[in-house]
Length: 397
Ligand code: SF4
Ligand code: SF4
Image 1 (cartoon, helix red, strand yellow):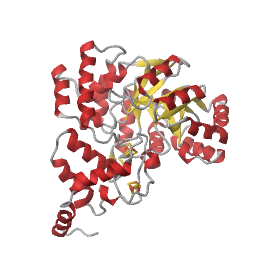
Image 2 (tube, protein in one colour):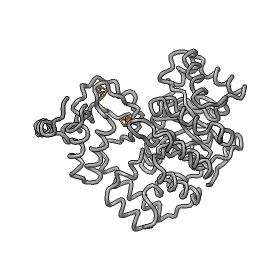
Image 3 (cartoon, helix red, strand yellow):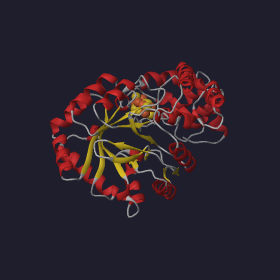
Image 4 (cartoon, rainbow, N blue to C red):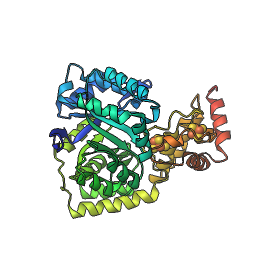
C-alpha cells in the first residue's frame, strides 16, 4: 500500500480509502460476516482510511464499521463520518446525531468529520447560524474530532466560495476522468491544494459505472494500450496521477474488487502517466460523454421514492442501452422494474411529486429524465406486454 501525507497533521493516509456505502448485501441487508471480513482484511493489507456516513446503508453503515473495527484496529485507522446537514434543524439535533454516531462506531473520537453533501455556501451558513461550527470547534479542542471538513456536490463557483468560507482541515469531492470539468472540477482541486487543504476523492469510478457501463470502443482503447489492466485500474490510476489528491475512496462491494484495488494501489504514484496515456483518456472521455444520457452515479440519495420508482435503476438501464448499444437492456428493464416484480418500480410510476430532486448531488432533473426513460424504455406496447407476462406467470399485485 502507498501512503500520502496529510501535511497539516502528518497523518500517513493510505491512498486507497474504503467507502462503506456499497457493502455486499444478502436478502436486502448488509451481508455482515462478509462485510466485516472485507474490512478486517483491508486493515491487514494497510488500508487505514474508512469513510462512512450517518445515512449510508439506510443508517446501518456506521454500526457495521464500528463492529468490524472494535477491539481489532480502531487505533490503527482513521474513521471519517459525516453530519447529515440536511437533517439538522437545531444544534440539539446535531448533538443527538453525533452521540448516535459515536455509539454506532463504538468509539470516543472521530478522526475526520464532514458536513455532508454541501452544495453551496448557504448550506454552510445555516450550520454557522445554528451554532454547529462553534460546537464542532469545541469538540476539536477537546480531541473528540480531529479534523473538520465537508463533502461537496455542487458547481465550481460554490466549491471555491466554500473553500474560502472556513479554515477547513480537509474536503471531499467527486473526481474521476469524466468529472474533470464538472462538480468541483480540476480547477477546484488545484485551488484546494494551493490553499493547503487536503482533498479526499469520492466516486473515482462514478459508482462503478466507469466499469460496468463502458462502450465497446472504450474497452478497446484500454485493452489496446495494456491488455492486463482493467477499466477500474485505469480509472483509479488516473485519479492517483494527481499529486493534489490525498486519498481515493472506493465503495468496494466484493472481495475481488478489494483485492484488485489493493493491488493497483500498491504501484500507483503521482505523475506516473505518460503523454500517450493521457491522450488515450481524452479519446475515452469523448466517446463516453457523447453516449451518456443521464449522469447518475447510483448513490441513491434520492431514494426512497414514495411512489415506488427505483430512480437509480431506471437511469442505469437507460444509460446501459445507449452506452453499450444493448438491446436487451429494454427487456431487463421491463422484467426487473415492472414486468415481473410484485411492486413495479419503473419510470412511469413517477407522479412528479418532486420529493427526490433536491436530494440529487448531480443536480439531475429527475422528473424530466424519468419521462424520457419511460418514453424510450416503455413505449406503447409496455403495458400490454407486462399485463400478459404477469397473467402468464400468475403474478399478483
Ligand atoms: S418526483 Fe417521481 S421519482 Fe421523484 S419522488 Fe416523486 S414520484 Fe418519486
Ligand atoms: S438520480 Fe441523483 S441522487 Fe438519485 S441515484 Fe442518481 S445521482 Fe444519486
